[in-house]
Every structure is written in C-alpha cells, then in structure tokens.
Amino acid sequence: MKILNNRLVITVSDVNSTKSYNIHQLFRKIILIVIIVTVLVITGAFWFISFLTTEINEVKIKKKQEISILTEKEKKLQAQNLFYSMQIKGKVKDIEELSSKLDTIEEIVGLKRDSNEQISITKATLTKITSAQKMYMLSTIPNGKPLERISVSASFGYRIHPVTHERKFHRGIDLRANLRTPVYATADGVVRYVQSRDSGDFGRVIIISHNFGFETVYAHLKQTKVKLGDVIKKNQVIGMTGNSGRSTGPHLHYEVRYASMVLNPRDFINWNLKKYESIFTKQRRVKWEYLVKLIKEHHKLGQL
Image 1 (tube, one colour):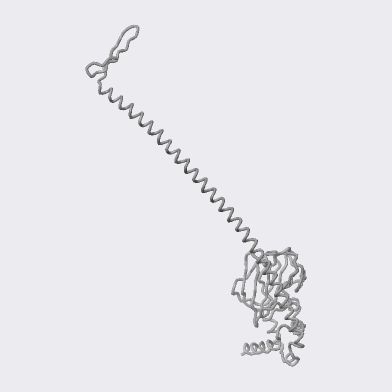
Image 2 (cartoon, helix red, strand yellow; image 1 turned 180 degrees about the vertical axis):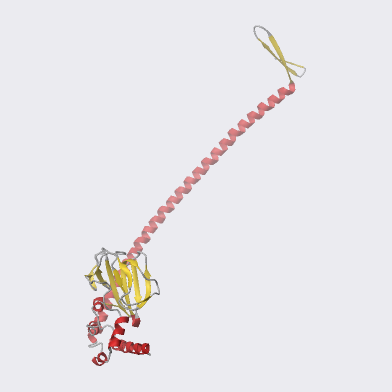
C-alpha cells in the first residue's frame, strides 16, 4: 500500500499476479470519520446504558426503602387497629354490663312501684268498658300470638345467655319455630324500624309502633316483608322466622315495650277477650286507669 499524490494505492499480490487499486485520499478521510463516529456511538451507547442501569438501581433502592417504610407503617396501623379493637370490645362489654345494671334498676323500680300500687284500675272503670271498646283495645294494643304455635325456649327476665354464657336480663321472650315460619303483627300499627340485612345482635328485625305508647319487636328473622312507614293491621304477616344475628338456632325473639319500659310478652300473648281482665293485674307497670279512659275517648271520637 502506497500513498501517491493524495491517492491511496493498495496492491494485492498472489502467486499468479499482482493487482493495484488507487483510493482517493477523501475516501480515506470518510472511512476514518465513519470509524471515529462508530467508535463514539458505541462508547456513548455503553455510557448511556451504564447511566440507565445506575438510575434503575437507584429507583429500585428507593422503591425498596418506600416499601420498607410502608410495611412499617402497615405494621403500626395493624397494631393500632388491634389496640383500638380491644378498647372497643372493652367498651362494648362495659356498655353491656351497664345495660344489665340499668335493666336491674328498671326491674327494681318497677317492682317497687307495683308494690305501692295495690290496684292499677278500678272496678268501676272496668265495668264501664263496652264490648266495642274492648275489641278496639285488642286491635290497637299488642295481644295474642305472633306465631301460630307458641313454644317458649327462653322466658322474660334474667337468664344465662346461650352465646356469651353470661347472666343477663332477657328483654323479651324466645319462641321456638322452624325456618320460614310466618310471623304475625300482634296489633295495628306503623313500622318504625326495619333491618332487612343480617347485622348486629338482632339480625333481621322489625319494630312496630302501636297506639298509646306500645311497641313490639320481632327479631332474628330470615326475611322481612314490610318497609319503614308501612301501616300494619293485626294478624298481618310481617316476616319469616330465621336464625340471623346472635342466635344459636331458628326462633323468634319477641318483645313488648311501653313508654320505654320492657314488659313480659307472655302476659300479652295470653291476653284475649275471654281473659280480658287478666292483663290489668299481671301488668301493673302500665297505668291502665288513665290509659283506658284515654282509649275510651279515642274510641268515641272514632265513632263520630
């Protein structure tokens, strides 16, 4: 290879012959430039790849640090949640104990009041109640059976709770029943509350407001057939028995309330036209003398 007058002469020889090729010096420069550019591109690519690798590694390290921080925060939150859950359980237990004590006080107060009241309604008032007024009372005040067949599994009053195994005041009466047994309203009224989902101690529950301050509660239902605000007639099917809420088996929890007091539902279940006067002696916590007079006035107005 020789360089002559800005030309690059390349000679190729073999056994048989010799050949010469002339390449202009410009081509030589171009080739050199291409080689240099190629080397620079390759070098730049390696540098860029190295830079990206470093950046990726840094991002990975930051992500690991963030994950570690989040994991620690999650552990702290779980610990706090457990702590608050324990506190809530403790408060719930305190509330239940307080409720039990209040029930005791309420029962004591009721008994004291009963002992002071020798009679809750006079004979004179009883004799003046007409048959129509009696029927009116039996349609507006809870009475009769919420189920077709009555079989008591837990009575009203203190008992050992079947789930918590603690001595508590049972505010109603538990009636045995197969699943999906029809539940009947025990008096005319308006639906004050409906819980159609299985939630809380009572599960699916219906509360009906009746005239003159009475309410009835039907709990642990499988299905509710009424809505909030529905006007209900006595003996209307309002739901089906079930095992929802805190319950050990299918049954109906039934309560009768009057002016924020809980009354023994058994006395109201047994109350009917034949045993009309029985309720006045068994349930002396209700001021029947005043209530009957009010009912008679309402009944007269309804007939006008």
